[in-house]
Amino acid sequence: MGENTIINLIELRENHEGEIVLIKAGRAATQRLNEMGLVPGTKVKLVRKGPLRGPVELEVRNSHLVIGYGLASKIYVKIV
Image (cartoon, rainbow, N blue to C red; front, side, top):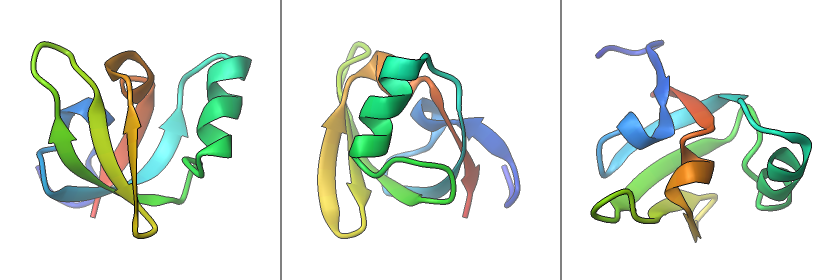
């Protein structure tokens, strides 16, 4: 996968970075992500994925966030 490839956040490999390009979620989930600073244009680093569809740890603007697998699956990123 090269640059400009758009993938689901959960497909991003650990310790790799992507830029959020699309959020396919309902109003409540989108609002929750917005409140955490996860909006299109934001660069994120996938730090760790939990086993068996467990939580996903992200690094965003020098802060660490943990979100559930279901919420993470609604975020699409461009590999950077």
